[in-house]
Each structure stands twice: as structure tokens, then as C-alpha cells.
Amino acid sequence: MGYLEFHRRSIEQPDEFWGEQAGLVDWHKPFDQVLDYSNPPFAKWFVGGEINLCHNAIDRHLAERGDQQALIYISTETNTERIYTYRELHTEVQRMAAVLQSLGVGKGDRVLIYMPMIPEAIFAMLATVRLGAIHSVVFGGFAAHSLATRIDDAQPKVMVIADAGMRAGKVVPYKALVDESLRLARMPPEKVVIVNRGLDQQLAIVAGRDLDYEALRAAHMDEQVPCTWVESNHPSYILYTSGTTGLPKGVQRDTGGYAVALAASMKYIYDARPGETYFATSDIGWVVGHSYIAYGPLIFGMATVVYEGTPIRPDPGIWWKIVQDHKVTVMFSAPTAIRVLKKQDPAWLHKYDISCLRYLFLAGEPLDEPTARWISDALGKPVYDHFWQTETGWALITGMPGVERTATKFGSPSFAAYGYDVRLLQVGTGEELGSNQKGVVCVVPPLPPGCMSTVWGQDERFRETYFTDFPGRLIYTTFDWGIRDEDGYYFILGRTDDVINVAGHRLGTREIEEAVSAHPAIAEVAVVGVADELKGQLPLAFAVVKDPAAIATAELRARLEKEVMAKVDELLGAIGRPCHVHFVTQLPKTRSGKVLRRSIKAIAERQDPGDLTTLDDPLGMQQIQSAVDQPASREKK
Ligand code: AMP
Image 1 (cartoon, rainbow, N blue to C red):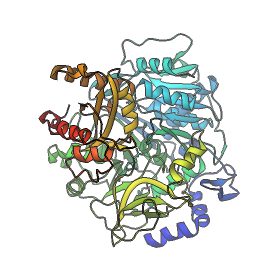
Image 2: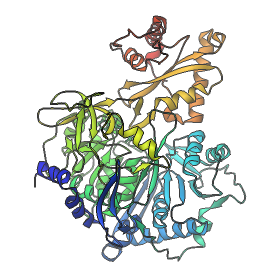
Image 3: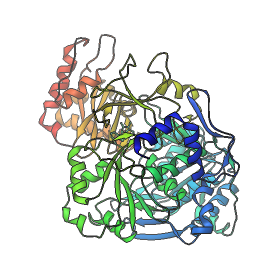
Image 4: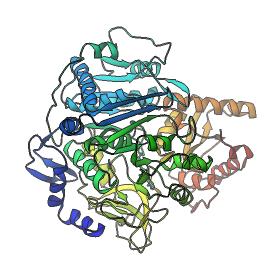
């Protein structure tokens, strides 16, 4: 069956289509109904079915693949390599599950995981869902304040952390930051389990609260912890993502729909086979890490690579060495990483035998044409651009070589994935657009299995945020602009909202603005994302100070800029740090007081600022212009 026919069937006969895909995973009790969409936009998949993600990722493979490699851990930071077979993974996950259980974790409880890329992080995720509990992994780059916000929203019973991570040879201590977040949180968990890697020499232990994982594990070495069967719609995890407000949303994922969606994607999108090795270079703190490091490959009976390190250490051949040594067949990465590699000697790409590799998929941010062309030529393998979001949990617009090897076009992620009824709609009217007309990329609900079920604890926010852009109709908006050419290929043209994408990481400009404003000298600030050759976008801040004396000299301005950056590091994490903080005396606003972020961004990127008739006072815009014209603003901090 060709792609078009496959897609049409998924949309026109969803019950039959997804009912068949459900056979790719194990059910403890069969479901009664494929889809219950009686309460739109809340789609319930595989209603009444009982399932467990951990069973599907590990236990069900034991008979056939007990001695097969399941988890390949490689750290070029600590020079460690450890391989776990499915049987060994089963044992380790049961130990972790027993530890969590001994701390009172049970069905529906939350476990917050704040860890670097080490096997124990994956054990903790799998152990949590084994118990029917719900994990919330927070990316290790987020600072104490961001972590505290997530703790308060998820209200975990237990946190599992590591003493430290490592990045580019430097130790990144986690524990002190966790202590600070627990001091800030209104409802801190009672217990913190620490995987002590021995990296943080100053580790301070809070008696009664902090527990050493190694000691706990030793007390549960032979424990058998059966899987807790949960109804298909029971939440498996919460993953926070940025939006237009300062408060991140907890994307809630179900269990059965997610398992089916991931298994189907391994077959139809990645064209993978059980027994092979899958290598996603992401981090467990992001959705790709959830779907394609922790769960997807294991559910499909593959080995998954857990890599701690950068793409260029010890040398820029490291990824290809991993591909060669572990016979990786499918690889998943992000355009930023490829742009980093593009700056290195291309000879590194040919040093290793990568004939085993079938495909490279790239997602998370726009894949620019020169980068796509470079990597395709250099690898000599199909490279697929891949459009998706934390919300969808798996690809929304993508090439699907497992269905049909359609030709790719540079700059395009190809076609709507099966299950997604994608439309391009005109803002405001909701009119459906034809070829080569720019509109908002939308999905006619119900969303397929695996997509977010709601915002954690806030059903109304889910409906309101994603489904109410077109009055009178429930339509899911991706908040991305797009265009479809005459051959049906989609092109993604950037966000419609104030979300920016730095090196594939999504950040809300409001969150960064809140962090900048937390500096006592700052009265007001506007943060915009500006184009960057390497990272796609970078945050840039324009701040108004309370007292002009604070920026009277170049020296004072430089000092304040540093302080503001440090504030962002402290509250949000270095990933949110603006590349520059320009000081102005007023921001350009409309007469109704709205900051004209889009025009600021245009000026910062040296483009046409568009219609400025609503501008209250031209001085604000002039100041932005002179700030970006300063020579200093062209080099990066
Ligand atoms: P996140 O939820 O962090 O994965 O961010 C999702 C956002 O990243 C999308 O809404 C897009 O703006 C952007 N994005 C992801 N993949 C692509 C892609 N292949 N091309 C263009 N933009 C992308």
C-alpha cells in the first residue's frame, strides 16, 4: 500500500486502522473500544484495555530476547561503556522499582527525575511506569527556580536525581541546585534518591530526606516487582513544555495509545526491525528522549543507545564510531548538532564503516537546506526532516520509508503522518488554504494515539490553549506557520506565537522575560528570538532600567548586562540566557500598551518591521534600531 492510501485509511477508518496497530503491543486485558471521542477534544484510545509500558518495553521480550542487547550506555564524559541485555535491564529496573515502592510510590503517584544521560535515569523512568506511577523528567539544564515550578505542579512523592552531570569535560553539579529548588518549592517531596556518580566532591546530604541509591539498591537485589496493569488512558508521564505564558504546561501522556503509537512509528516511520540498534542523540529531558531513547526502541525489541557526551568529543567522529561499533541502523538527531559537525573536517564522516546505517532523521527545529544537503551528500543515506512537538509525542509531518520510500525535498519534512488529518488554515477565518498559501499548521481532531491527552491537572487549559483558535470549531493548532507546495510537500515556516527554538530546545520568551525582570534594576523587558547560524535562534533582550544612573557608562552597562545574564542562568538555566541585553529607555508599544515583539524581532534580524501605524511613540522603535546598530551587538557573548 502506498503512502496516500495508507494515510487515507488511517483518517477515514481510524477504528480499523488503529485497532490493527494495537496488535503491535501486548495487552493484559483487551480494550473494549478503539476510540472514545464523546467528550471532544479529549480523545480516549483503546478504552478498557489494560497494559503496562514497562512490560511492553522489557518483560514481553524476555523469552525471545533475554540475552539480546537492550541498553547501550556510552559516556565520552566519564569514558564509560556499559551494555545491558534485556534480562539485565529487567533486573535493574525491578531493583529501582523495589526502591521506589519501598518509599511508598504506587499507582498514580508522581516521581520527578532530574538526571543526566546515565542508565539509572532510564531505569527510573521504566520503574516508575512499571508501578503504574507517573514520571516527570526535568531536563538537567533547567535551574532551581524552573525545577521548583515543575515540582509544585507535579507534586512528586519522590525525586530521583544524580549528584552531577558532565558536559564537555566539566562537572555540572545537580545536587546543590536540587536543594535550592526544594527550598523554593511549596510542596517538596519527602524523599530524594541520589545516584552518586562520585563527581560532586562537595555533596551535602540532608539527613532523613536524601537517600543513597546504591545502598537502597543493595537492599533490593533480588526483588521481583510485578507490573501494575493500568487502563490504557492512565497517565504514563508529564513532560513540561514552554508556551506563551510564563508557566510551563505539563503535557500529559496516556499509556496504551502511546505504546501503540511508538510501536507503529518504529515500523512505518523509521522502518526499523527488532534486534537492531537505534541511536537518538537527544536527552531524556526532552520528548525525543522519552519516545526514542527510553521507550520506542525497547517496545519494538531493539537496542537503544544512551549517549552522554557531545558530537565532537573526543573527536568529531564519535557518533559515526558509535554507529559502526554498535551497528546502528536508524539514527535520530537535531539540525543544530549537524550544523556543529558541518564546521568540522568532513573526513571524520568517512573514517568509520557506517554501511549498517539506513536512515538519519532530524527533528526539533527547522532543517535548513544547506545543512540538509550537506549531511545527505556526506552520508550518502536518506535523511528525513521530521516535524513534531512535545505535544504530539511522535512525528506529525515526516517521510515514512516504512510505508513508502517517497522522494524528499530539501527544506520539507514531506507529508502528514498517518493518523493526522493535517490542514493549513488561514488565521482568523479558519479558511482552508490551497497550494503555496501560507497558513497555520492544524490538525482536525481527534488527535491520534500517543498525542497529549490533556494539560496535567488543567483540562480547560488544554482545550483553551490548543483548540479554540477558530471560533465555532475545535481544531488543534500547532502554532507553526506552514505552506504546502503543489506536490503536497509541507514546509514549516516558524512559530505563530512567542515561542522560540534555541538549538532544538523550545523556550517561551515570556519565561525569559520573567527571569530578566527578576533583576532588581530592570523595570521592563522584551525578549525576542533572532536567527542564528548555528543554533537556529537565540534569545535577545531589550530592557528598560528603573534608574537611568544604572546604565550611565559603558562599564555600568556591561556590568548590568552580565548580572542580568547571571539572573537568567540562576532562574531558568543557561539555555535561556540572552545573547545580548540591550538597555533602552522605552519599548515600542501599541497605543493599547502591547509590546511590538514581532517588529522588534524584524529590526534585530535586519528585516522590514512591517506595519508600525499602531505604534504609540516612534522613539521606542528608534532605540531598538540604534541598539542593534551598535557594533558590539553583532558579536555573541
Ligand atoms: P518541541 O515541543 O520542543 O519539540 O518543539 C516543537 C516545535 O519545534 C514545533 O512547534 C516547531 O516550531 C519546531 N520544530 C520541530 N520540528 C521541526 C521541523 N522538522 N521543522 C521545523 N520546525 C520544527
